[in-house]
Length: 288
Image (cartoon, rainbow, N blue to C red):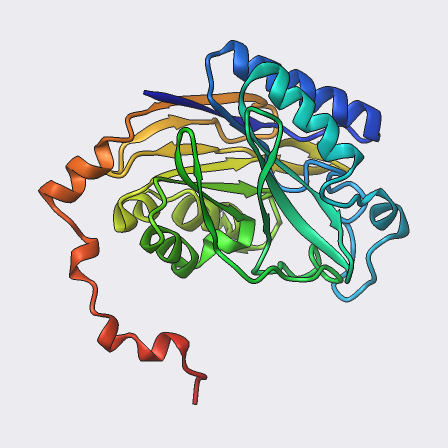
């Protein structure tokens, strides 16, 4: 069994407080027996500087000034915490790259080395205006299996998960920052409904025969409520752990993964074997 932990909470505001919080959460996850701990989207520097931005406005200077390179001082400190506690860490941050800024997630090995960086590919209007998109869906080998990472809107469409499954992922971790938006359809908050039906849906795990771990923030950033609802889902659709919905429900969401379940599900009833790539040309063609 492999135990994983999802950090369902929002970060503090100041950099020193965020770093202290990250180190504390890593320690709590390791103490709970987790081999991997994952943080929600943009844990550094958080959403407080951009959450009320009007679509099309430039990124606020305080937000950009907080960005750091990868590797850099921030990832060095997180890497040291990962090494000290011998745990895999997926840490999320605003990256200052050579050509601009990225919404990024960094996978750090228990020896403290940076194993992989995923940069958000499907950018969210208003939130990601001014951030550059990433361009890959890599899957990487680790001591606890083959892992892929998605960030928030990356998981709202089925294709990224399917690509990672085809590349041999055992586990896909989705790092999200989903909040109650006020955009309603039939009385339901649309962002929360998308989370429930897409980003944290058992269908993503079942369709691709993978473990699916979707972590969302919980708490408040500048009066906006991040609603939690983190889930860890097995390849057979079983929800192994489910964080409660609501900004008040902060904490770790833990589950034990039996990675042999993927083989057993595939052997019993393989959905992936039904693929018909010869019919999929419209998926990559421009609409008429």
